[in-house]
Length: 208
Length: 208
View 1 (tube, rainbow over the protein chains, first blue to last red):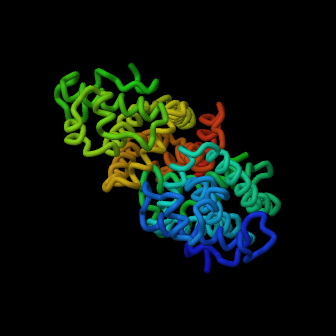
View 2 (view 1 turned 180 degrees about the vertical axis):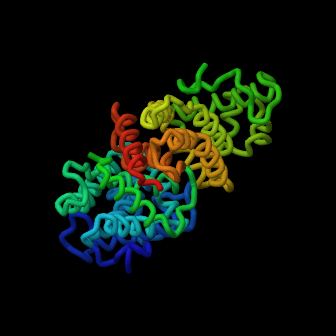
View 3 (view 1 turned 135 degrees about the vertical axis):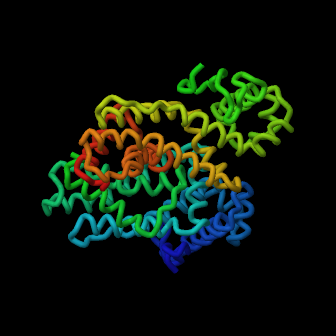
């Protein structure tokens, strides 16, 4: 099972778990899969801890103890899904950016997956602490991806002093802007186009 | 009253209205103000047509006839607020972009206003036709703003063939990305920084 196809990987250990495949990991997998199925079916407003627990075959108190609420589950699901986009290393900044963005676009290729994103934003607006969870997650994720830009600087492809986090933001922001705000179609050439724009801008020193 | 301060302008005619200040316009103003106050107070889930109508001092049937649902009101409010950001003409692309972005940032300067944005995204996800409303609105808005880039091309500041819509997207997308997804703070220098990045990229031909 792959997260790319939006199945939650059964073999994957929970965060902090030292027992891959153990009971805690199995519970997490079952609950996240249940949330994914509910969101994929477009059941937005009616999602409750009881429904999730019933679908996952666990006790509602287990869900409440671990995640606090439906919002906590949605944030954990988002974290689980996004963190699996691979960080490429091809020797070319533009190609690395293109492959990275292809991974991001693949995540949002179905209505169910876009629903998860919209639901996550709603969860953050309503769930105390949700914004902080997202901020910490994306800060860590951006640091992880920034290595692409640091490698390009070491190769002399972009000026030294290029701010890697801003390059990553420039690449990814238009995807979320279109999905959430402008609803313009991204189209099959989106990864090529946005990677070309960002790498040309970076080479020209726009991010120094 | 100004929309910049998130009051709905009382004197402003409704879309398609030929009677500025007439009853239709007054009803719209009252209902949009009621929605703004409810959203500003963080009342997300509980917003109903009845509550809006009661707060606005109109009949619920009037709200239903005109907007269909709470979601219809939220989309109309968003349209009303965003369309009022001024399109500057200073003779410099970077300065025009900076001023334009300052207007956008001013819109989202309070939690209540950011709530409107999150609620609008939720409305689009749940309301049939909502995505189309947003797509048409932003396509028209982008064409309107694109004149900045066309003027810069005419002055020779950016290469001919620069795709204006992509310049506007590059400028604005990081604002929405931070507000909705990464929750990184935008900070007081955001307009300067993002205008500098986009204008440098445009001058370097990244959008051709």
